[in-house]
Image 1 (cartoon, rainbow, N blue to C red):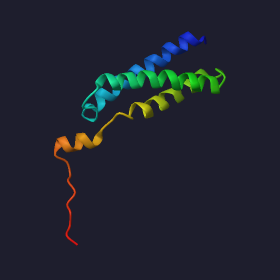
Image 2: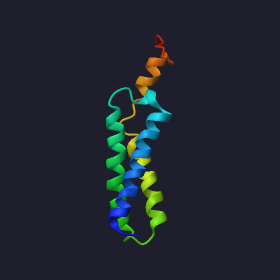
Image 3: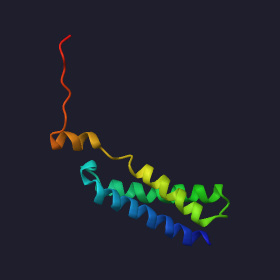
Length: 98
């Protein structure tokens, strides 16, 4: 498959990862929703191209699967679960006197 077609597939994977992260866990991304979508898009394009060249473009399903995995991991980088827990009134650590 030609590289421009694969690049479009990588971009679609990245956009789906960014919008999916915002849809599934919006409380983890309190600021910069554009950052999440941009991170998904850029990570999919870069990881897809690197994986494509490492595999020599031989196996498209494997390239797409590895791109989905790498994009999912990299899209979670700007997540802030500590802020989501604090906002919900989550568990607080108690300090015990020694």
